[in-house]
Figure (cartoon, one colour):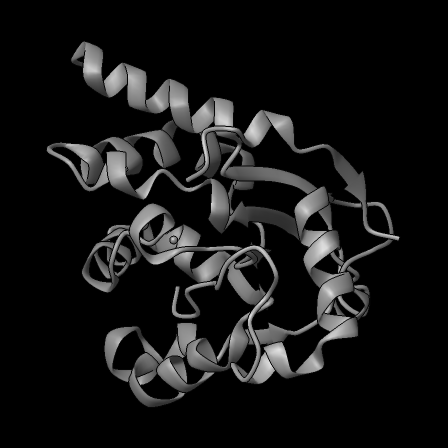
Length: 205
């Protein structure tokens, strides 16, 4: 493995983009993916896709084993040019998953999807991904609704996700793309912030 690939793997580990911890209310392991931490600019470079596949095979899949699991994907503050690797990239990663992993995935909880993401997947989801995966997608507009699926205190959520959730409560039109947040506008169709370590974590309340 080249030094650049090793550095990329170390970056993924440091940012904790992918993390297996806790169980949902059906007792399944949870793979949490924080979209804002995904280093798309780096991984879109030469060898990035293969590095990600190798990282998942070494670090994540062994933790999941052959048991059923769910994914909590947090889309909060994802931005197109920083955190979104592209649909072709995502599809290639999904199609390269071992059969046991794909078969074990039973639910994908998409937190803070936004209107554009909903429309995108409603229109193209069945064509870009398998019907099986699309059928497992569940939109979660607020963290309180994630609590219907995930046991209290099972996973850690970055502070900025809670802050965004609070902002959505105060400005509900943001859900429909009719109003933007005070800091920036999110890119609402599935996008790094190297300052990931600056965000404190707290459990779902």
